[in-house]
Image 1 (cartoon, one colour):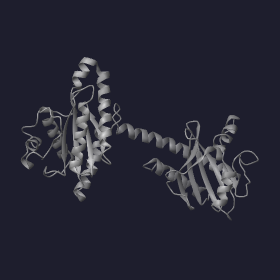
Image 2: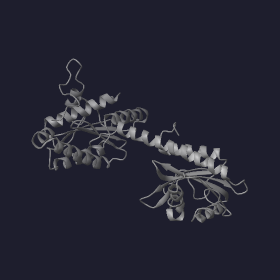
Image 3: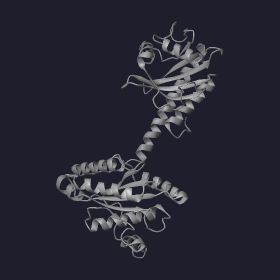
Length: 368
C-alpha cells in the first residue's frame, strides 16, 4: 500500500495481499457510505464471477442487507471488545464473535451459493475510531472453509489495511495542498507547471494542441483599498468560480490561480479557436461581475502561428505578453498571440524581447 500512487491502487494492493495471505480465491474491500445507507464495493480482486469488476463503477448494497457493519460490530464494540472478523459458509454456519452468524448474514450466504463459493471471512475496517467498511475474502466450494484462526488473522489484516488507508488519506491531503490555491480551490502555479510540461511533451510527440490563457483581474487594488481585503478575496473567489465554469467547456482543461490577481486556463487537445471562444465568454462574464473591472486575457496556442515552442517558458511569455497588450488597451476581448500579423505580430516581438532589454512588467505582482 505504501508504494501505491492512488487510493485505488492502495486498496487493490491490500485486497490482493489479504487474498494471498488467507489462501482465498477472491477478495474485496467495501466502504460504508453512511449518507446513502449503502455498502459500496471499491475493488474486487482474484477470480471474478459474472457481474463482478475489478473497479466497479457502482456496485453497492443496502446496509440493511448486511446490517452487521452497522449493528453487530457496534454491539460487541460497545461491550468493551474490539471489532473482530467472522466466517460464513454456503451452508449458513458462521464462526466468529458469538456462536451464530450475525443477524441478516443470510444475504452473504446466498451470495456465496450464487457465485459458487464455499466460505468467506469478513473483517471490519475501523478508521479514525469508526467503522469504515470491510475486508472480504472468499474461497471456492470444495476448498477447506475458513476457521477461527483465519478470522483472527483477517482481523489483523483489516487493522493493517486501516493503517494503510489512513496513510493514503494523509498523502492525498498533502498532494491536494501542494497543488491547490487555498483561497479559490483552483490549481496553483506548481500544478500548472507540471501539467504544462506534460502537455508540451505530447505536443512535441504528436502535435497535440496546447493553449494557455493568462488572465489578469482588473480593479482588485481599488476593491481592496476602498472595500477591504475580505471583499477583494470574495472577488478573487467569484472570478475563480467563473474561470472554473468556463474551463469546464474545454474537456480536460486545468484552471489555476498563479498568484495575486493572475489566473490561467490550460487547454490540451481542443483547437485554438475553441479556446478563444471560451476565453471570450470568460471576458464577457467577468465584465458583468458586480465588483472589479473585468479581466484582461492573453492567449498563446500551438495551434496558431506563434513559431517554435521549445519550452513552457516560451508559451507563458507569449500568453503573458498578449495579456499585457490586452490590459494596456483595456480590451474587452482576449488578445491572441500570432493572430494580428503572423510571426511579425507586435505581441510576438514583445514576448521575444532580448535579455538586454527585458520587459518592465514583473510576474506575480502583489495585490493591487
